[in-house]
Length: 70
Image (cartoon, rainbow, N blue to C red):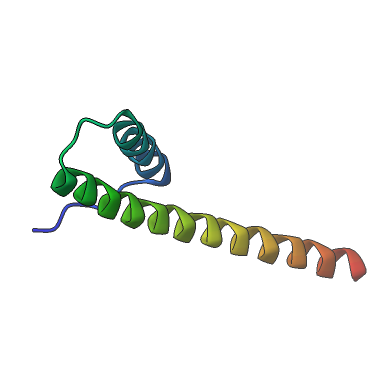
């Protein structure tokens, strides 16, 4: 069974933790690479959430503009 996809906030918070770990150092190369890979996945997920939110805002703005023109 696959784990549920994290919310935007969960993904962002985990990404922040990963960046802090990488900046602090003290991890092996293998651990650093795994953290980097997870960070890339989380960054892509956050971007998808933001793109979806942007599309909803654009659609709402277009609908509002259409209704005000009538």
